[in-house]
Image 1: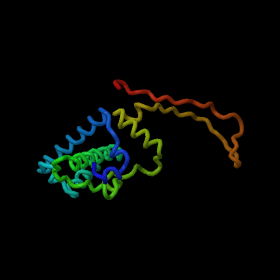
Image 2: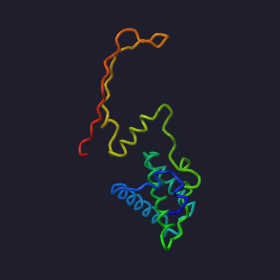
Image 3: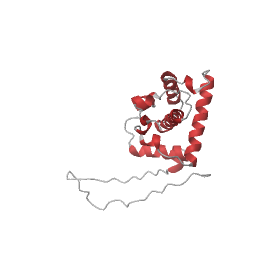
Image 4: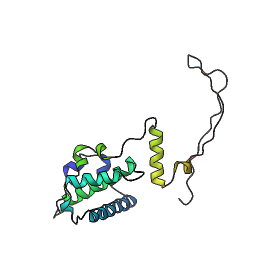
Length: 171
């Protein structure tokens, strides 16, 4: 495996299980169809510009999420690593995100005010192929909690309610 892949993001050189391999091959297939639409028919035609155009194409898809586009870019990094390590490499160019960093090739960050919890929720929705409303039941509770200037809460606190995540039907 090329040394540059081993120095990249840890997920780019991790071992894949059957589901990860299947997902990677599906991403390669989608890339191959895009290549065909661009009139490209070999890995040797994949230049920095072509790979950057693919990343831009994926980032501009409706509903594109950073986590999902990252998986597409990692899949192409794996393809480049396999090509580079093969006995007869086709000559695929090193993906520019491997050299320059992946952030510039991803869709914009989520809106301000959305924190780590929404990122985790978005990742769960990607994995389970569902919507947030399939996982969370929202209930409005009209109870006011008053705090003093010292941070102490006068009176009893509202009861703690544990949240359960339910698996969407069919999964």
